[in-house]
Length: 335
Image (cartoon, rainbow, N blue to C red; front, side, top):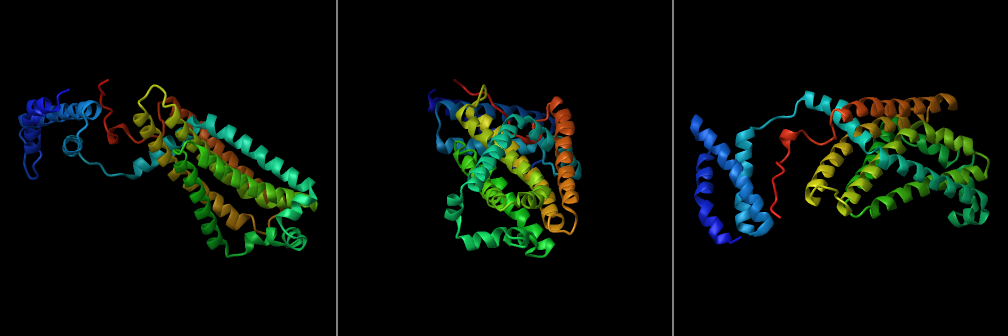
């Protein structure tokens, strides 16, 4: 495509669109129809230029022009409580449900890795000695030791806030680092499973694995599920970069990226609940069976939320992406 000829042929249309978009100008009915037509033509022109003869200055001008025209044509819309309710009842559970083939295998494999690390440490005193001196290990694992007092080391409210912040950061890392070909997500998962495996191994070596699980399971079930979902979503995002499927790579990444952003907000709420359990239930004086039962109930409630509301929303076409009216248009691209 000869860019100079193309610009000469269509400059008058772009100038006319810019004239119609001047602030404070009231449009007649005919002018409004003309603005819509020129907006559609200019969007197509922009797509053609980007794909065949990209020119930074011209592309920048047309991008701004198309954005202003789209805002004028579609209008602005403020988020409402209805949008939040739709996200919580449709968008977020549908996104989690649709990514289940990524986060369920991630959860199974990660749990096996943690269990194998725990078995290896618990069965090998030499490995335990390499982790820390015997005196420090005794302080960690004895009744009333650091593993047990960790959950009551700070006031419940501040501890819950701290835990929520740390876990939300870990989930956000998994979601965002997936775009780097999946490898950072695997590293974050491995570190988390290593920490869990060390606790399992050291406590099982002194015959107190039941105590350790009684401290971890109440909040850990929901917490680890959220981390696994974040990791699975990050891995899916990374794989989209490698294999975008039938969509153009940029379009596929944009779609998965928007869904991942929504997942981050939803998982922050899930981790907030997990943080409350870790701050108020785990260090409480409730019997172990009662604390674990609360953790199991929270986990089952979340899975029911995903597999009932999420499956229902997914069947209606919900993907966890933002509303179609709020997305940029997917314009045709010249080959």
